[in-house]
Image 1 (tube, rainbow, N blue to C red):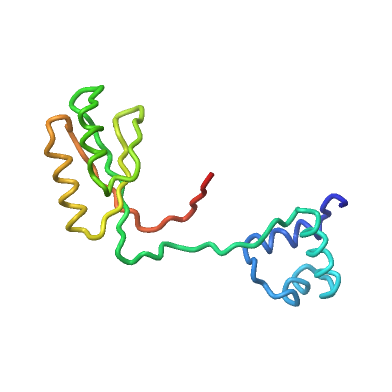
Image 2 (cartoon, helix red, strand yellow):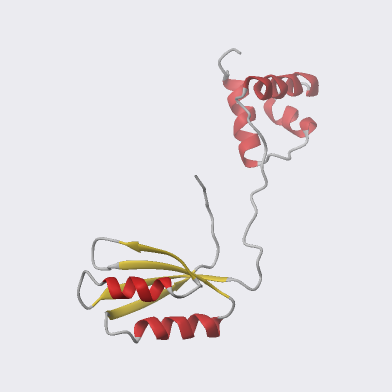
Length: 145
């Protein structure tokens, strides 16, 4: 396939933001006939420039609260806290980080009460000096792989 020209890049820009835009609307916005725009899209699909269309799904689970627990340890290293965190089913990921914090703990819980209970249990350990909780309101960008 030929390199994408300015019209192709304009089409790609629109499709990357609005994958479900009607072909008639897309054509009008880029100043082409419907058949010309449709042929350009089909050619880019065949050549692999357009590999697919996707739905960007927001958080759907109404009964899941995600949060980050920012942990400062009394001293490092402290392997005991990692063992303790691994024992909680709600803990999804623990990352050791540099800087003022020592650990970033990602959790998923069913309720604010459970988040508070988990937070309190972790904060009450002798290894933890300080703990800050950040509740995730929305995930704006999420990539895997």
